Length: 505
Ligand SMILES: NC(=O)c1ccc[n+]([C@@H]2O[C@H](COP(=O)([O-])OP(=O)(O)OC[C@H]3O[C@@H](n4cnc5c(N)ncnc54)[C@H](OP(=O)(O)O)[C@@H]3O)[C@@H](O)[C@H]2O)c1
Image (cartoon, rainbow, N blue to C red):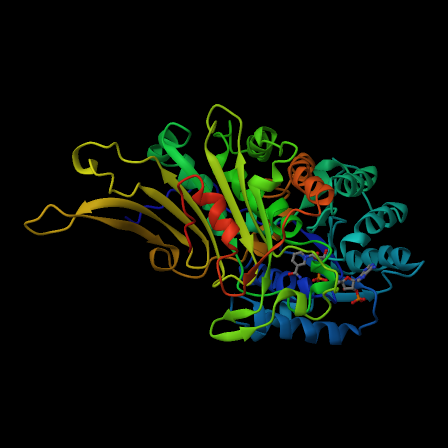
């Protein structure tokens, strides 16, 4: 079948200037510059016909040096091969300014922006992408406002602020950061990024659920036995202990990516495809997500950290031996938990969430396991495995549906088979990177794939109910698992006690 049904065409972005705060950093090099180049390479149907990119950070870098660094980064990380002519066009739009930490830095930013806009004939549509450490976010927002760089919401020219995760390190600090942002920006101007939401397969979750009639009818407690969400990384903490150790897996992964996936898989059909309707439907899932009852962390949550082991045939050190990890660290690199959504659709259905570093392979997978086949006909001996839908977010994007079929032959023998869709073989060409999609959406002002303030608050409320019990109960175990394994025994027990098992991607 080749009939493509166009629901909405990608809009071309309006003229604007993107200011990357923290342009000398890792995110800017690996993701933002390559994504902006790729958008440029899409041509006038997508890229604004006039725009500029201004890097803003602390250290002085000559513009030519900044452009050369950007070229190197784009050559290395862009999904499209670098084309010399296209790169020259793109690079002529790049500029750089130092002084983010200087008292007159924002006054100079204003002057530079006005000069760029005047020289290029650009309207003052401005996007401020805060790719700076989390503790600098509130200050940058305040200084932008002080410098007169924030237009009123609804003004003829837009001001948009893009904020990266993490927002806060617990419920209280998240609310504080959000309060600081909202003192200077209207909620409609704030775009909180969770890059998972920009991934093709994550966007496909909604299409899979709401563009097919078969799934929605089965989606809920009547037919679903349980749901598993696993986000596994094979990498260790590497050189990022300074950032990672104060956070840990619960804050770093569960609070954002896993709860986003949970919301998308469990939400009711939104009343429309508008950003507000979709964000409301997702928020309702978190409203119904059961907070941990006092004392429940012991039975519902497993935390652990990796010990020495083997990944991809290489011996690797344990977390405690990684450079920069404090000797007294009790940080978890793995969390497994069982959660419930107390609404009509999901009442009584467990959601098992699991994430960890140094697992055998990188993979993000959602598995919806349906109820057992009744113990009649072919299943009298209770031998048949249940049907399951497995959605692979990354890598090998796609999904498979496991059903049972007769093994050809004179016997009556039944075998599970997979109806498998692989994005790579079904659709030609690589998918756009998540940051490309998200940057384009910021330019056109579509907030569907961004995280609302309420979602951030509710997700922290859930995570805080776990953090509180961990801090009140230091005797709660922090298990160790060998690097290269699927996690500690305790995580296997968490699900095995319910007569179930983890699906390992
Ligand atoms: N890297 C990723 O893959 C990734 C993924 C998700 C989220 N994030 C988030 O994105 C943000 C940037 O991450 P990154 O990895 O690019 O960090 P990074 O490599 O450390 O770069 C940080 C940038 O911010 C500037 N900076 C450092 N301290 C600052 C301060 N106190 N005030 C103002 N600017 C400061 C630095 O400027 P100078 O170099 O000029 O000193 C640098 O340009 C962080 O919030 C991070 O949590 C990153």
